[in-house]
Amino acid sequence: MKRISVLIVDDISDTRDSIRRLLQFEDDIEVLGEAGSGSEAILIAEEKRPDIILMDINMPEMDGIRTTELMTLRVPESSVIIMSVQEEHAYLRRAMMAGAREYIVKPFAGDELASVIAKVYEMDQQRKEALGEQSKVCNDSKKRNGEIISFFSTKGGVGKTTIATNLAVQLASSGKWKVLLIDLNLQFGDVAVFLNLVPKRTMADLTESGPIKYSEIQSNFLTHSSGLQVLAAPTRPEYAELVTAEHVEQILSEVKTRFDYIICDNVSRFEEVSLLTFDMATQIWLVVAMDVPTLKNAKLSLEVIEGLHHTPKVQVVLNRTSKEMGMDPRDVEKSLNFKISYKIPSDGRALVASLNQGVPFVTSYPQSKASEAIRSMVEKLTPSEDVDPNLELKEQRRQNLSPIKGLRRVFGF
Ligand SMILES: Nc1ncnc2c1ncn2[C@@H]1O[C@H](COP(=O)(O)OP(=O)(O)OP(=O)(O)O)[C@@H](O)[C@H]1O
Ligand SMILES: [Mg+2]
Image 1 (tube, helix red, strand yellow):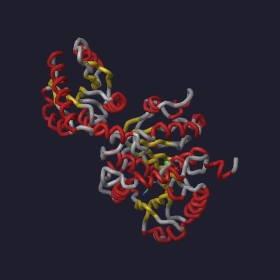
Image 2 (cartoon, helix red, strand yellow):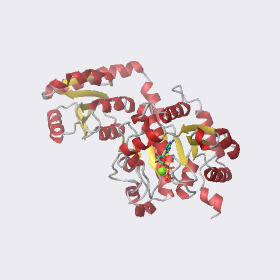
Image 3 (tube, rainbow, N blue to C red):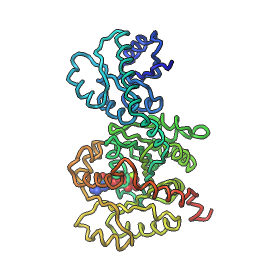
Image 4 (cartoon, rainbow, N blue to C red):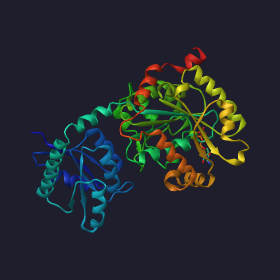
């Protein structure tokens, strides 16, 4: 008989140990893992897909309610049982709203816990049977390739990282999409700083041994409170050269079937890594500003991109639009001979404050004009229905534009 698989989530390791002990003599229950934080729990659950997740409410960084919310969306086949103490009763309603199936009040005995687990599991089996083929459909859709967006600009400081981080957080916080942000500014990447995350391991650690496996990549993810996963750039410029275009190609190949959106933040240069991301991307977002030197170089970039046959993937993003710039978005379109897909207004106050707080402006200043622009970006980018109407077009693009080594094509080596 199949045993009920359980993941224990609690920030206190003694508590996790005692729960494990309570369950060790239950023949039909198997503890398949423990997590000390919400973000760790999501990673383990996504990989191991437990039947039941025993979730503590009070945890630092991401509490049990937010973790449950994300868990329900990311690992819908697992059922969350909240473990709370008496005084946390007020939270229980929120936990159930977040998608928890049941709760149990601490302290509890082993047989009490086992019977709650068995009851929830049984109810869930009945629900799954009633839903019929639903989980099969889910598994099939997991194999679909995600949208890979490569952010590029010809000049530093035009706002690539700002837009990439805010777009990624906005996409992830809806809970509907699995989103990964990869910092490919390998020498001076600042995505982690923008999101106030502390990288313990970075992309450089992935290059130590042979072919990169998904499980290794996954153990390097940083989880933002929005649910966004981040693969940080090396912590020091001298480690940048450890990461080659081949490594990035392996990473993107591994992650593209596991995420809905993969956002790559590049350096402002045509070099092997940025060109590799162009090859593998489904969209290239060229960020431009309203000044003549930037536009002159953006035009040159569009020519290079055309030489690479990537023009159908390009979306031009005009950042820092303002009436005071002495030009109009239409002038930009005319000079680039390219339509602008997205516009982000200049919003110094929200931008600087959010950068200094390490909180994306879509979260800290949701009412700002810039946040509004990011939200309409997400609306345009994401399918309005569950079924992606652009899927056929994307597939066509992929087939026409199979990955080839860009640098060699442009510069002939
Ligand atoms: N719409 C905007 N309004 C006001 N300030 C902005 C806007 N977009 C970006 N900025 C500011 O411009 C600065 C540079 O932005 P950012 O670091 O995102 O550029 P970048 O293109 O990633 O640069 P690099 O190529 O050096 O990585 C930041 O201080 C950011 O706050
Ligand atoms: Mg940047």
